[in-house]
Image (tube, rainbow, N blue to C red; front, side, top):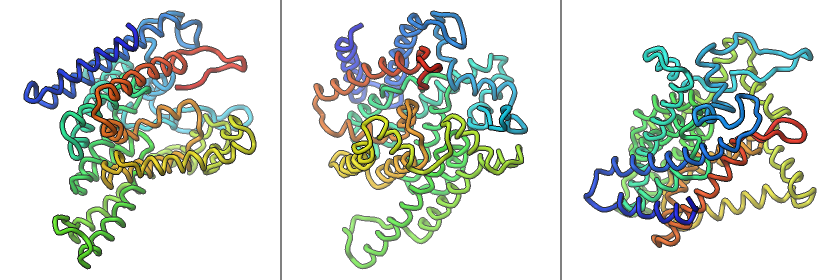
Length: 415
């Protein structure tokens, strides 16, 4: 099926789903998500037919084998054998790749489902990922409806569900579970239900490392709401604005503390079990091949791609461009909470992330920008063009990064 025809079909699907009063909103969102996953499944199956010799299975694997590679193997390992009581070391005393890099909530749910049903661990993890992705889509829609009409919010979900790396929502990775918890936490924050958000954030912090940027977002939001309250008391805001009460500010501050503690939970557990206070950090840096130095990897990558002069400037240009984008009219319509989350999350990536091909997958928590993209224009041509571009790039992502092909120096680019 050609990308152009695919885009036309998607346009008809969304138009049909968006007819007012035809189906409940959750049916429409669910239909969009399922359609998106079927498209991704077709791309995965087509790529599997081209898969050659690889470290996991014979060439031309079936769909289920093909999606259970890369980090999916690590999650299955955790389900079956848990975490090592001590960090594994090579003959030189260096920490080897091990399960402590993978947060526990997703594999624990997989183990529970596998134990209760007798399903194979890989199948249990795949089922959880698919259901969590559906839940994330529903929560994302509810977030978007806080800021836009139904049709635009639904298009935001379309962009979220077909994002170039959205195929990861249907493989045994923790991304879909983390996005479900993140979206629920953001929705609760937007509704000022800070106490209800605390257990959700605690679980989120055990699914993937999003606790640090979330804590930064909540702390920044507390300062912003406190400033707004003072301006309102001085008569500098419109009368319709309802400032935070002292109780709400106290709950928001408490959520910031819970988020910060939650961000430290998994490293602390790794320390308690292995006896090494840096167990988690050492494990994470194994995949980098170098120690964690804030910001430095971005400059190294810039120099590698653009040379010594442009490479030093590249991170600054990127940050400036992102700042302009965050101040654009469609993105400003997202509101304080969603904009602040995107800023804090990108800041977290700039400080701690080692940029590589996996970086594309790590952009999924910036999902509020999908609504910003939908707000740019209501033109069917524009939205269809964005959708077609996403589907084409999804093909590129799966064929280039998910499918394994040995590089001249050994190994392959990770998805």
